[in-house]
Image (cartoon, rainbow, N blue to C red; front, side, top):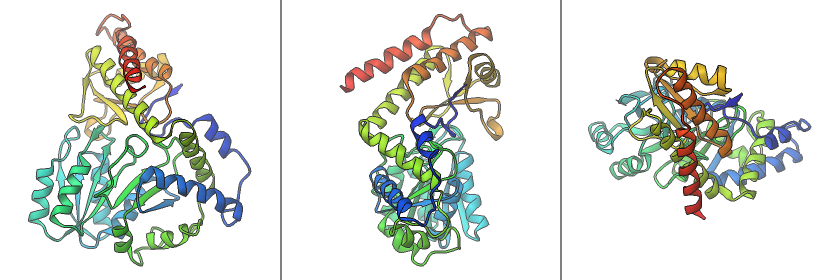
Length: 373
């Protein structure tokens, strides 16, 4: 079965082998050396002033960011399930929340963010997804963050990059907290979250808030290549393996270029067989198709063609399917995915199979590859 859900993504064999080794105690020089290597590579990936690893899912990092960086009112951007989650975290933490809500295929605009900030000067933090995976859209986070800082230079900008870090280079000039999760483009099992922090965020955190998610405790300990509490040792070993593999095989720019080519080719292939792309600004991390036969297509892909893709949540359940494009994916694997979609359409009586999807994918992908050389 080919796993093409946008998280968890497949774990490469070299990472599985690395994680299958001897269990290490987290308070030993041996593990501290591994931690130091992983941390050094994370600084290259995030390009931020500080990086912190947490033994949690991405939601734990989202909560840590909100609790430690927002003191009064959060402006949350809700264009999907995960943007909605930021607002829920704020309320659950005793903070006020102002929400900009759009349909899941519609990104936030700079104008509406500026309007909200001007109307509510008590807002001291902004939380937004870079790639909102509920509908597969890409917010223009960099421009929104710059506009927010122009109004209030002290506002903390929290960017959920859980399905963006490792997918594309992110301009963190105006971002104070960039969040990633192990089970997405980092190609590891779930359970490790990472936060990249600006110096302004470190200053705002101060002595921190909370207990387990107190980022001040982790900043202090992780600068010493250890953690405040038990580290996710196996996942950090895997993380070092993944990041070193990327470094040794063309680096981050090759990873980003390959992901962009893959995303472009999948979009072209699925449009060529008559399918409609759901978000108005698609993220590179996944292709999201809205279709009246979305459930039937997913079932056929899984049961007849050995491909597992994700569906939708809430009001989009049964109405969309999402194909992962993150990580190290061979062209021969993903071309089978688009080919299988075309075969599924034939089984549903929608079109005759003629190999259009795979042909367009190959023409698009390999022409782009040639151009990049």
